[in-house]
Image 1 (tube, rainbow, N blue to C red):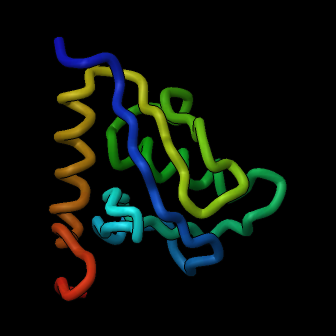
Image 2 (image 1 turned 60 degrees about the vertical axis):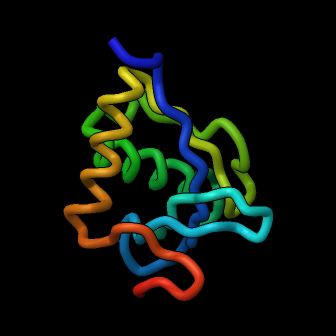
Length: 110
């Protein structure tokens, strides 16, 4: 069994027109983040709930196994996923790859 759970940092765009993972980028502090957008408005926790649902779908776990643990009122968020870390990491990587997203950042493909 792998590590217990997985922690992801995301850069979220609310009111993004669709619920989607868009790739991986580097923040100005040098930390990598998964780029995500959700249709929900950033009000009354709707965007956080949409992020949790999006990540759950990408990781192949029930929504109850995903929660925003940091950045609830900010665009950069930390999301924790319960389960086998190696399996979860592979599932999220597969979701990014199957969407044709790969790594993206400054100077990378769009």
